[in-house]
Length: 323
Image 1 (cartoon, rainbow, N blue to C red):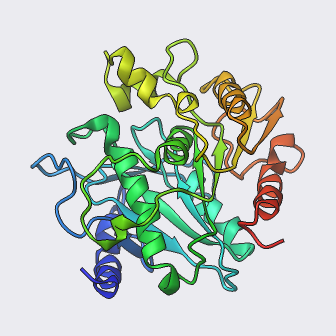
Image 2 (tube, rainbow, N blue to C red):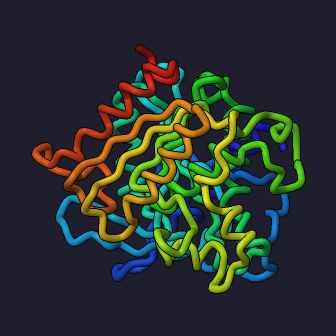
Image 3 (cartoon, rainbow, N blue to C red):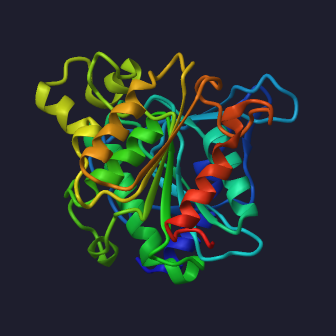
């Protein structure tokens, strides 16, 4: 399928991809530019319908906080800035590998990045517990394919193929970290010319991330959803990001709050230690307040609210964002 066909299919399919089921009945999100990742049969397809569900969780007037499940067609939602500068970010929402926090860790992140001139791609990745085969590889398949699709169409997206970062949140941080450390691992059979391109991000931002699958420090829900209830020792080790750092791991930016009650800060600490041991570029910011899932909604008086500025500064220093 050509790039033009992908774009047309994406725009036509956008409403179906983001159908809302709420108290007022079915609605659609209009005006989204959506690019499906796979041109044909999706790897590990379960052979049954996976119903799409979008749940509005916001209790605050003026804010949307949609949780997406039933990702039957993995895709990129493209958010273009008014004045693009060539930099791009693949945004990976979290949700414990059980849902996608689409607004808090997707739409709102794209908003501040677009204001900086950065083109954003929100990754709607498959959830491993929804019937796909090889569940432990399903999210990484989508993340690798997403980077390759972006690179293959860099000119049409108006981005530099050598300036593409990934930012992941919570379990999305685990996926972004897995992409940063396992980008060269073959996890699916190539489907077209895009799969000849590198899936390596040029920089990875891991925000309150799940890193390790070690039962002592992991987020149990993320581990269970990704690996199942009784993973082998080999599966645990393979999915623990801190054990996968190599000389090919790109620069990594880490943010965590000490009072995170969902994902222990030991996850980020273990990743930072692994990066230092491997002599890889890394920067870590630890804050005493912020909890988990703070996104960019924190009041400016909360120290953790500084993280987007810190990330942008780091990305500029590493040559991904303009200086």
